[in-house]
Length: 212
Image (cartoon, rainbow, N blue to C red; front, side):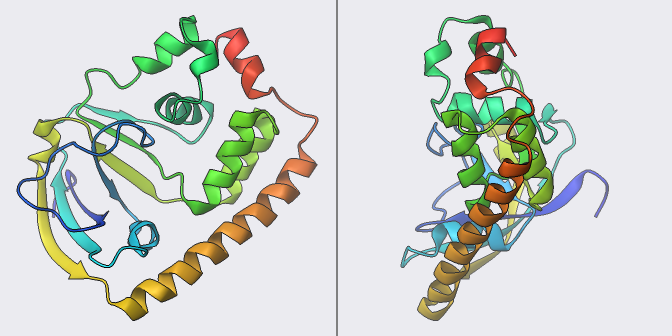
């Protein structure tokens, strides 16, 4: 395996039928695409409620793809906010247009996963309950894998399925419990960090007003 080839994972509620395409819901973290992750467990927790769930081990060749790499921070969060329709109050503003165009022209976005633990912190940031300082410190404290999102058919054509695994009922029940435990740990950790940094930084609406 060369430097341009990676092994990634994808969870599907009912299996992949036909060729791989960038057809997820458009309200996913980085928009409509085909989502893959570096952490095998993370996609499992997203599909454990579905009887026909499948886990795929994939190989992707990144050569010849135009890739947007996002570091963990406010820009990463703003792109997620845009795609989850959390920036509608800033529609027609320069920052809304800038973030909306951030991934335009790219075949793939690479950024950290907003998993069960991160949903709690993200929502608090978007609601204006915590500042960007508290938010970024929370991100740094929670160990996240990365997600690779194929935005174009060209990128999807670079993905090869290595293995397909069916989830048994016992596995799904175990994962449901693990997912809820992760969520509760995330809430507790976020509460502690947000208390520590509650007077530092800017709130989400202040960032939107200031233009980034």
